Image (cartoon, rainbow, N blue to C red; front, side):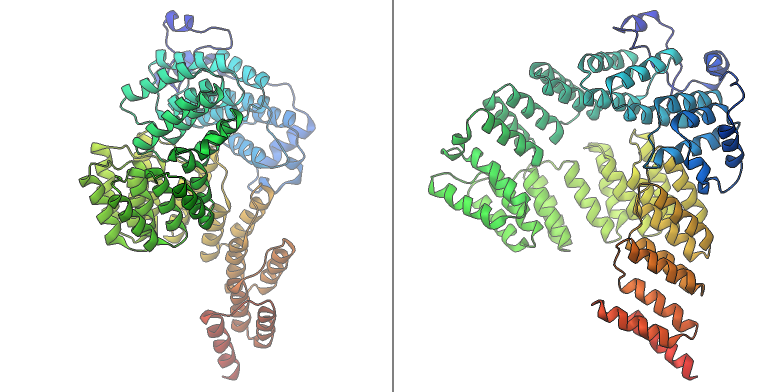
Length: 618
């Protein structure tokens, strides 16, 4: 949220350059007239005929279908945004324009819209758009323009905005500005989170400032936060670039000891470090740690036989398997349905005197849940705590995911409340999993409460959060709420994916609103999101149920033209519609076509044909 600017001149003195002014948060309503008088847009001269026509089209309900609007360029769009009377419609138009893959909004479009939103006191959308503008900056010049704009308007970001700005500054290699922003953030009273620290550490390590990055790591620990995979991998990268492999492997050992699971980026960084220093021969000495790197990579790629061959070679050279090697093998076996062998290795590991760490337990818990062995997963969870191995966020998320998959969300909530009280803190994955769990059992009120809780605790909903809610509302028959959530998703600057579109299209079809479904399909096609087989199945089924078979056949042809193969659901929808309309012979021809394409009918297909034949004979 935006807050009123600090009047203290000391804060402004912290800024190293005119490109680094104090950034404004949403102010209190009582201060608006004094703080934003400078933001009221000045009247534009008479707009061009093209812009005037755009205003006329935007006044109508079906403006998204207009080919004239599609011809507008970014400069024209900026004029429309500045001069359109309705700021909310201007916001929707901006979202629509920015999602068209053939266009990229210019920075002037962002400036125009932000001026309108702030003048209209629409501060929450303004905050979202400002973050979207930061993320859209593709060059240092654009970023400086954006910072100059914030400087002129006296913006100051909240935590979410600061993080977005730091990430983009890192991508553009604007190291000095990023570090100054970080210190400015600390001075402004905004508390950094792990993402903030991780971003700064990554920026420092990429630029050879490993000692400074180590100080940020100390700050993480002082704030009672736990470094994660990204934190450690960034530090490993910094040491490798400084050609200090011993320190890099020291960080790797600490990472595993802390129960933090290395990922492919971690191992790739170590491998590159070994190659660049000419130290690859160290892989084949008696140190098990160097063997672990390729074994983990092979296991993560599903190449278990090669990984096992390397383990055999490792033993021949007198190297003993360590915790990381066992963990990699257990994780790989669980992913390839080799759960029994994974459990056997887990017990052998204990017999060899090695204590399984958090990552090992997480891999086994995940495999047990996926195999439906709920009781065993719970036993491993309880066992790891008895042995003094602390569960991390991933452990809790796996357990919560498992309970939600079997519809026992109340059990998941017990773990969630434990995370809130004793840690580790729930993250975005935790919230999304529980929201999805509530949606799947139809408890939409609790799903909304969890969304509110998520926002209150500083976690921004993402595409999947909104997609789960749209899907849940559609399945619960609350189509208005689904539509509202879909539009809120757009207003937050998030792009709906094919799952979001398909869920809402299916909801419209089941509610008999075929015009809305078709309009949304067209909207989907005009964006960068392509309909998939499920999308076409939903709308073909909708038209078939309403006996609009010509439209269903048209969509079927369009689907094939798009290179999508119809499946049993597609054919069954057409066959069912034809049979209900007495066109049984045509339905049988569709059935023949279905069989020729090696698509096997199911029970619903046969039921539709039997009902159609019985109806014809009766």
